[in-house]
Image (cartoon, rainbow, N blue to C red; front, side):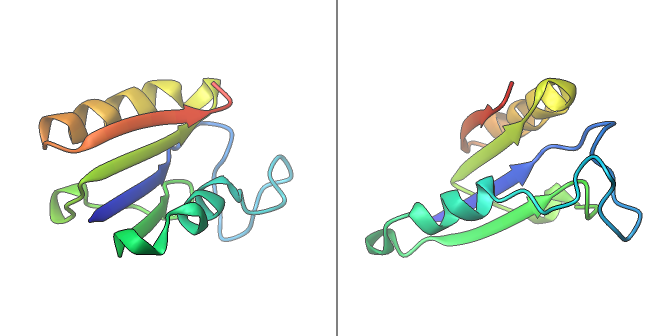
Length: 97
């Protein structure tokens, strides 16, 4: 099973090679979720923080796409959810929004 966990980008959380004053620490929600996946599933888990890296999603595949967002990144999260649904992945959105 392949699981893709994504922190959707927004206008607040951006990286210029350092964390901004608004976010002076790395978000831990997706790391925590990855650690909670039972070992019996033998899952391959990839975590993507769109505020830190650009990703070509066309080169990735997953069975489950988990997307974390806040209000300011909700539109991007909906775009990602639609994209992964069309590709056949079970899609979930969570976070502060």
